[in-house]
Length: 142
Image (cartoon, rainbow, N blue to C red):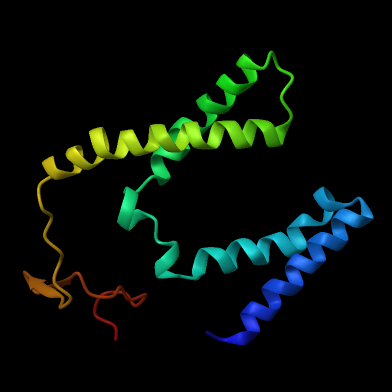
């Protein structure tokens, strides 16, 4: 692991703490938060790969996250603060996403016919190259 990205990520976390202390977290979040979001998205740790154990829950979390949050707000009479909504709705949405993956999405993907990958080499049809890289030159020019 390269140390520079890790050091920059730690500096971004420190910057976020400073932004909170300044009372300007929302306004300044994009400065450090964007780096952290990209850093987390690009790194891969096998021990964080939950999909090996529970399936691909990303789409289910996307689909069921908002209804779970709305249910929490409705049950609380609209009085729950954001962190309460998050802490209660996340397990509910994750459970629904798990069920959705195992009962709907994965079985549906098994019904999909296998697709063939196109060959890497371009082919010629009627003297015209098909599937190769496009050129800005007009026909007849090189």
